Each structure stands twice: as C-alpha cells, then as structure tokens.
Length: 416
Image (cartoon, rainbow, N blue to C red; front, side, top):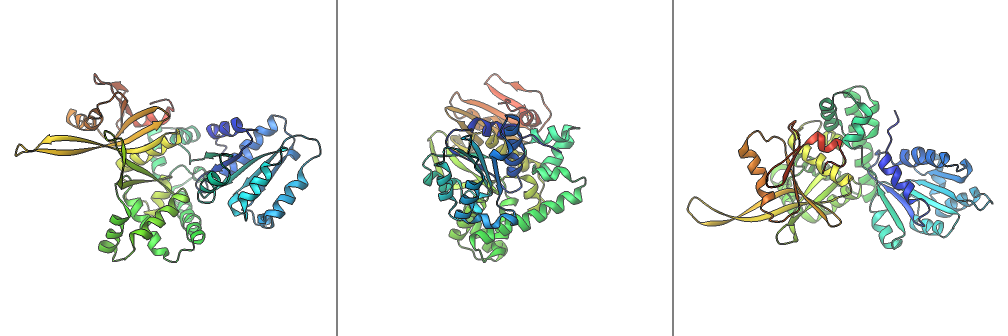
C-alpha cells in the first residue's frame, strides 16, 4: 500500500535548491524515511535526476554504522560526486546518529554541488541545535502521523467505521498493513516498549525507568486536562506512593517532547493578552500509541476527539494554545464573583486567529449555549467555531458562531 504524503512532498519540492539543509523531523515510524527515500526519490527521478546524483545513506542501518563517523561519512559522500558540475541530492536518514552531525551538515552546505536533506527523530538533536548552529540555514519540515483525511483516503469504506479505527489504532502508516486487531495492538505495544521508551531511556541515560513509565501513563490518562509538574509529583506521592520531584517530572516531560511523543498547549489569557504559566495541557502525537500505553483502556471519545483536533490544527500549520476568558457572574447570595471560562483552542497563524471549542455532543439548546459562552465573551471579531461529534450540517448563527461536524472538519483541509 502506497500512501501519498503530498503535503510534505510538496514542502520538500518547494525547498529544493534554497541553500538550506532540509530537515524532516517527526516521531519514529511516522514515515520520514519513506517520504525522503521513496516519494522524494521518485520525484527526483521523474524530474530527470540521474540515480548516481542521488546519494542516500540510511544511518540507522547496521551496515552503515561506520558512516556514523563524521569524517568517514564526508569521505563517502565526496567519493559519490560526479565530475559533471550537476547538482547532487544528499539524503541522510536519522542523521542524529552521526557524531558531530552539525559540523558535518555545515561542511556539506559549503559545497555548492550539493542539495542536502536529512531526517531525525529527536528535536533536542535537531531543531533546537540547528536553530542556534545554522543561524537560519536549516529548513525544518515536521512530519506527523497520518491525518484522518490521509487515513481515510487509504482505507475508504464507511467513514464512521474508519473514524473508530483511526482513534483506536492511530495514524502510524505501518498499522494500516495489519489485517486484524491483535496484530495492530501487538505492533503498537512493541513499538512503544522497544522503540519509543527504550530510545528515551538510552538517549537520556535514565535509571528510573518505572518512574518514566508511570509519568507516561498519567499523561496518557489525562489528555487535555490542565496540569503541571508539581501537581503530577503530588499525584505520584498520594496515589502511587512514589516520590519524584517536580524538577524531575519537568525533565521527563521535556524528554517526551524531544522525542515528539507528546506536545503541549499553553494557557493564554485572551483579554489580558498574556500567557499563564501555572498549568499546561498535553496531547499525544498518535492515538494508537496512547492506546497502547493504556492497554486500550480509557478510550473516552470526548477526550480523544479533543486530542485529534489539536493534532489536526498543528498539522495545518497553526500555533495552538488553550484560551482563558475571565468574566463576572452573580452567585446565589447576590455577590459578584470572578468566573474563568475556557476556550479549548486559541488558534493562530500569522495575523489570523480562530477560537475553537470541541464538543462531543450538543443535544440541547442549553448545551449549545454553554459551549458558546466562552467564545462570545472574548468580545472581539475573530472567527468562532464549535466542532461537534454529532453528524450535523454546517451552520452559522446570528452571532457569527460556526458549528461544524468533526468528520467534515477532518476531511476538508479548508473547513475552517
């Protein structure tokens, strides 16, 4: 089964010859190697590039272990360059395995005959260092697991059944190749245990593996719930009888983010126009991995739906925060009290801003009014959207609030 990742392929094509190193990042097994070494390779050949002008090195291949030495790798690439003055396309897969890889890439950039493309599965080794070391000479393309639209284009059939499978088993491309539930689940569990968890432990030299496991389970159990390292540390102590300092929790969360396993949404005071650093929401990059962590328990569709919407917005290139709107209300005693209202997502791209609520069901007018309340209290003219799990037709009310069904949102990249 060939799954075309057109969006990401077009980003690579647009970046050809721009003088920068093209860096494809993303969670392991999301399809980075396939994107570079199959889809992009095919594009180059179709454009008339000769095979001997495409220099590919999969550095996670045991046979290429010797090429992880920087000088050996540079010598190897030099030996492949033809004396015809034509551009050569260098593709290095899992480049973070190379010692002093930043120096290697800087050296390759100085050779005008080369157009360089690399992949990596760790932001700490890639995007953070490259921003500093390359000073704007690195062009990062982040590859996500399959969106629901990509997933449905591959599997077809009833879209509601496809949605159920998607939120259960996730969007890692390999999952689509297994024909039954048992094989999908086994693959996801093994991937989590033997690839993601092992990689984080070994890379960061962690000794408290069980503490990390427990933290991951806590985060997976509470997707979309506001929290912070201190609260998690207290939960460990009260529920698990495990004493882990909040500073350690913060470090562990950083490792999970560096591995692209989780992402965070900061809380933003809409009226005060400032970030509130007290609590953060965490979302998983892939729902299948999250399900494997919990052994397919806690499959509450309302929280999963929120996580999928967050991922979809990030895939579409938006920055995503959690909004807080402060209002005032009169209580039963007639006293005026402060009432903070939450907006699920404050979505920004350039000058564009959209407020989005995720509502699993809106069966009554009262429920609809409840979902709209925080949106309308922003008192501004930015677009306001409710994404609802119910099968409804798109509508816009007299106050300008748009309501759209979840699947219509996911299947149409221009839906908002």
